[in-house]
Length: 339
Ligand SMILES: Cc1cc2nc3c(=O)[nH]c(=O)nc-3n(C[C@H](O)[C@H](O)[C@H](O)COP(=O)(O)OP(=O)(O)OC[C@H]3O[C@@H](n4cnc5c(N)ncnc54)[C@H](O)[C@@H]3O)c2cc1C
Image (cartoon, rainbow, N blue to C red; front, side, top):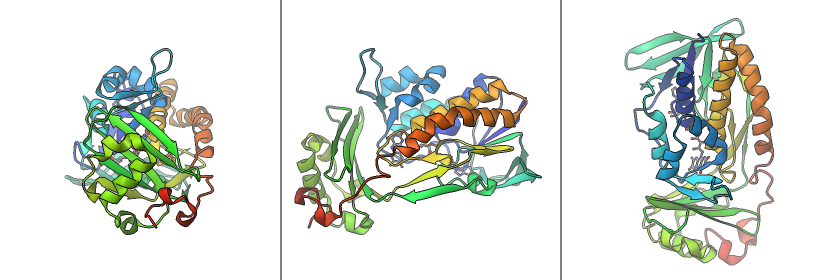
């Protein structure tokens, strides 16, 4: 049986661990953070992540905890808007996770990765593996230590997001700004959120006009967000980000493979990062089941299956190719910070 170490217990690492356990494997899952720690965020799970959840018997449960976005004729939604903690809690059930264990190095023999070095409550130790799976997110240390190069490109604009406790009357709404930038609204049973693109002016300048001015400006451009904005009373509920996209030419080398955000990171406007990460976990679990004694064959098949799925999203990221208007050239109502 292949010895598998999964680095990172976010949603992709947890999904992979469960899918492998269901196939009789006993992967070791290492997560540097304590149980239950995660960043609250506006979150929708796209349909690309549904097959993995369906196989785990979790799709209807996650759907029941959230609100559908745009169900089609057969009732299947395009996405589910759900409090991200519900998804993480559902995925984590029954999965042994070694919390507080941080991977700090890779063991290597020749050009093959043969395990990890880690630091945890018990001190420094080593863990041998036939396959190390990097699910350690966009800043992946495993990716860097494995020498798998990634191109990181800053997007031309920034994103200003609000989180609100107000429960609203819809799961989703979206509008475009005059430069093709985006503003959106998400609602789920416990709250709501919205975001818009702005110039990369820095956090201080973005928050300086204050929360009341932000509410007014956002509601003028998107009146249906008024109910959600009513719950925004402090700049602590505003999140300024300068997103970058990440693309790696190769996702594996002998003994190590990248999946999820460690392998690809799209701009926030695609809204599919998590769903495609769950799809990666599903494909890798299937590839390992097909070649249970040959990690290299499993990785090669994994890459062959996933490239046609992932590469088009990387190429079509709406934020990457935009001709952004400087704030001063926008219509006055779109300017943030206001003139
Ligand atoms: C504000 C915001 C909004 C978002 N909205 C959406 C959305 O609406 N829809 C969507 O699809 N996606 C969204 N995303 C992206 C989505 O959250 C990610 O695509 C998803 O979380 C990726 O999961 P992951 O498991 O690959 O990585 P992560 O969630 O980053 O998990 C990586 C894990 O690895 C652990 N780790 C890191 N290094 C080590 C180490 N050396 N040793 C041990 N453990 C380690 C970390 O502690 C972490 O738990 C959003 C992201 C943000 C920030």
